[in-house]
Structures are given as C-alpha cells and as structure tokens.
Length: 234
Image (cartoon, rainbow, N blue to C red; front, side, top):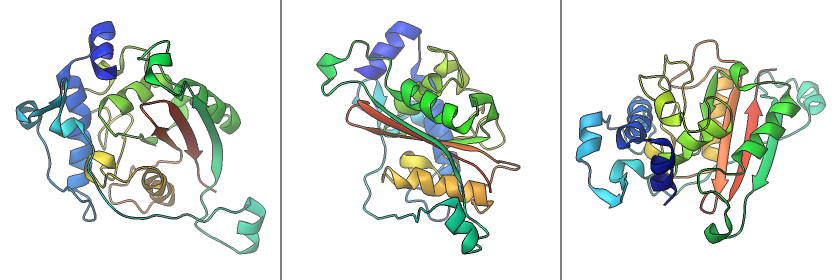
C-alpha cells in the first residue's frame, strides 16, 4: 500500500524501485559473505514475478537466520584501552508515527524525518556531510523514502535520486555497500551497523574511498518506528 501510494502521489516507477534492487545486488555480488551473490540487471528485475503489486520478488528482502553483536563504551574508556579502531557514534535519533497503519495521517511520510533530524543535530552534520549510508531495505520502497526523509533529496524525488548509479559504489551516495537486506542477509538491525563500522574502519569489502561519515537507518512495524545512527572516525 505504501509503495502504491508513493507511486500515485509522486510518480515513482517500478524501474526506480528496481534501481535500488540492482544496486544492492551489485554490492552483494561482490561480498563473499553475502547470502545472495547474484548480480541483477534491470531487465531481470522487470521479469521477476510480482509478490504483492507493485512489489516484485527482487523488491523483497531475504529470509535469514544469524546473530550479531557490538561492544559500546565511552570514548574515555576506549582511549584508556588504546583501541585503535574504535568508531565513534556522532549522533542518534528515534521516532514513531503510530501503532497501526489505519492511524497514519499519511502513508508516504514516516518518523524517519524526526529521527534523522535528531541524529544530524546531535552530530552537528547535514546530509551533505554523509559519505556512505546503510539504509534499512526490507522492501525497496523503504530506502527510497528514507533518502527523502533524511534530506538527501526532496520529498517525492527519491525515485529520480536513485537512478543513474548514484547510490552504487562510485556514485554520489553509495548505500548498502555489503548488499543490505536484499542481498547480504535478511537480518535487520545490527547488520547495517556492522557494515557502517567496517566502512569507518576502512575494512569493508566494497570500501568507499575516503568515507569518513556513515548514516544508518532501521525500522520496525510497517514503517511505524524508525531509528537513525550516524558514525564517524576517531
């Protein structure tokens, strides 16, 4: 319903959703630890079967089992322990729209805007300062709307923003550089954080050259709740 409404209000096309799937699958294909290591062309995307129109099979994330963990401590303690690869948290935020879809005032906006505003303000940064992003991609419409909510492009222009390789490695804003939920694993949450940490440490398989800041998003429910994390370098 959300994808269909976005298409109706803003003219977003299936090919624009496909550009996200193509980018994530391209990155996943280069990741030896990804669950799905098969690149995807836009033509192949168009041929994939519909799951729930307008979303096709390749718009939908993987189903995966696994686990992840991070160690969080104060900057002072990290210095005392002489941790050379500590990755600082520059900002974070959270927001929730409603408990039920029927209570939402607008299907094409979420609490991502509130969450991102809090995180960017805490970090003292703007979207223009972000070098790489790991955006929750349960379905392709989610990162598209997150790009709009975070201010990387105007509202309703997410479809245009993701085209032309802009979100691929080498593009203006590479996203989901390990493949995201669409290709690395369908294991949300810390998966995006781990890739953000790898990027900030310079250890990512698909390392973004010169990346010093990373924005990370997460969602819950049917885009009901949203969280944002901004990482940097020590």
